[in-house]
Length: 482
Image 1: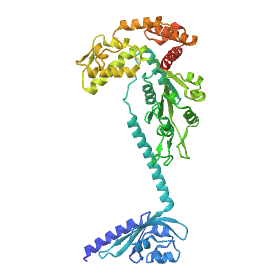
Image 2 (image 1 turned 30 degrees about the vertical axis):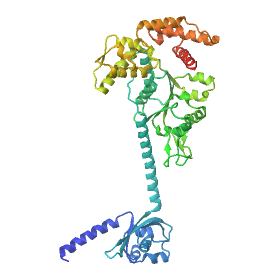
Image 3 (image 1 turned 135 degrees about the vertical axis):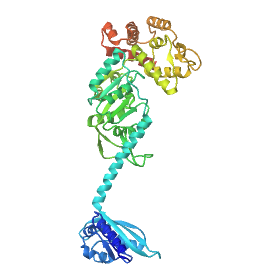
Image 4 (image 1 turned 90 degrees about the horizontal axis):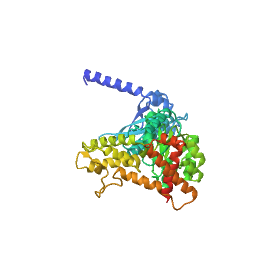
């Protein structure tokens, strides 16, 4: 070996020695017979053996003299394979040792490299990693859930005085954590308002989880809401699953159609509202929650309470700040704006340049829209797709698959319908039901006279605007039953 090669080898040796001696983990190397030929200070500390004693010792003899209870290095020599296990030294320190044998060209063991780390420290690291994996799993579940449930982003259209007033109220309460109940007919945009509240709140950067209480099978409601631990029941995921409340933590959970929630689950929801804690099915750990709850329904919860169909205590917990969204037929200004917005969206989506013809918007505003905003969206999309020309005429707005006109055709039809309706007195029913029906007919007539302005109609009728919603809702629910 020339001088340059010798100096180069010395430099590599010093570099290796520097790395080895400054490692926090224990490292030592034995030959094929178990004799320690190299070790770092960490190995001396972990095994509680002076470094000068450790180097040159045989690992089997160290075990025989009780310096530590086992040697994974010796076991690796005996088994001619990698060995990992817990090693306890004479002073009670526990280490996780990992020994790997290296073989020469003839297949003999030339050396065994062993590294070890403090068992408690190792377990602490593993615990932190498990927690991080659990958090990552939670985020992953949240993302997957949001992808499955994600709906088209909608802007809140508030051209009418009624909606402007609602948004003004919402802007005041969005920054708080108060529980909110949104009332309104199906398709009026209750979830859009809920999303708007979330976006204006301090939780805007966190999850918004929307749950339709009527869409989940009753047998799955509890596991969907509260989650479950692995093996909690037959068919449960081997990894467990966080519930919707857990996914919503630090964000907002929107409970749509909450009136459809079974009474048995209502008591558990009440507990969540009171304690802000949830426990997974099959679990023992209480999970603290920091979230906002927004409920929504198209039914009169107070009426359901009186019929023992909804818990009274839960009703008062949810009904902290009620918001009433009027039907679209009472908001003609919003009909105009929404129709234009949906037209623009569909033109962009399908690559068209459609526009509403003369009189089309007025026809849209005159229509009653029993399906509210949802129906308007669908009608506009159908018109954009099926129209044979860029101009969307009245006939194409209400064009059906069978090429017949929709259930409205002209303003005179609406007038005739309303006139006939105002003269009809129910032939059956008790006095209370007949009075409610006549009230509903008269209220609708006044609303039409006031061009759908709830405030003006309420003033003319001498009642509060909320009474109008309630009486009309009673009438609609009665028709559904009949």
